[in-house]
Length: 398
Ligand code: ADP
Image 1 (cartoon, protein in one colour):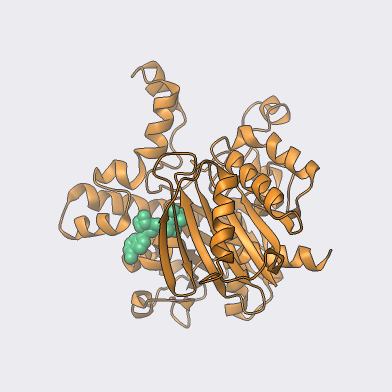
Image 2 (image 1 turned 90 degrees about the horizontal axis):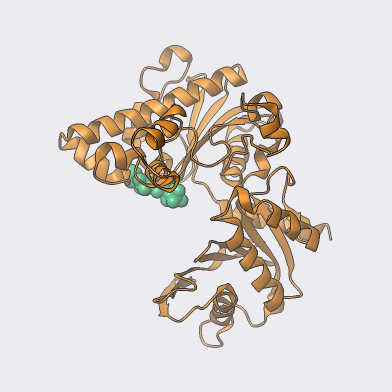
């Protein structure tokens, strides 16, 4: 069975075609600037890479282009659309409606629409992708997989903000959490590596990419996470500030005369590693500058590692102990220096990195010492495979 995994943004469409027997990626690609001039489709079929500059007026045209590439009689990877039994759509926000992945029906679509005010930049893209796939592949099972669903298991003491009750009861202002598919995937892999049932483990999973979030997981369920009502909260990120005193927001408006839009821009696009280093949001470049002695880059590095360390500390207390800490995504998987700084000095708490193993590269691996009471793993995330596994499970249940 083959599953198509779709991640549709407002002007992009990212996809993978996955074989569920072998878990191999048969094809993957990205349509960008959908609905704009200069749109293009870059893709890989097996080992061959290609780039097509092609007008993509909307998501319907983009999905049609993807299917025609997959079906191409010369170098395509499927002979008929019937080979794609099911499609998994990544949807960022499922609000309080969805606690797990679901088969898409009209009622499900209505609820995704109802969540749009909570994710105005993301949910409309997913809806366009879903509509296009429904029209072009009416026989395939369509499944929605939500970034927020994994965190619906959080207790009220974790997801409520200490704001007036009506803001939650009437406006659903609460912590939702994001990156759920990634946290779920790496937590399941950690249980496999520890050779223990997920049900008896306390884990902290750290997704450190451009966006960053940490999740406290007990028995396979999210009990707290660092991102909140939006993906702006929590740890310091590439261009996002993470948690700051909320009164800074009103000060920027009342004292510095910023508009609401400008404040949003500053906090989402001009802060984090970029804001502090004044150079870039890419940790590779911040690292190079820090190693060359740039004081702002050094500070950015220290603030980022300190931010992750503090949030891990919070979650250790939330969980009352931890069996393993997992690092994933661009920074977590690749930056040994950041990993070293995050865990520096934590030996009295039972967390000891093996500095040689920490320098190693590639794949799932233990980077703590053999006798470290708390294990530390690097586990590359694979959100597409997690989505495809959910789709496969729901397909088998039909
Ligand atoms: P996204 O959240 O956009 O999916 P990724 O998970 O791909 O992002 O992470 C991207 C970030 O990972 C880059 O901005 C960069 O800071 C970081 N990164 C990737 N490789 C390295 C590396 N070798 N050293 C340090 N940082 C890295």
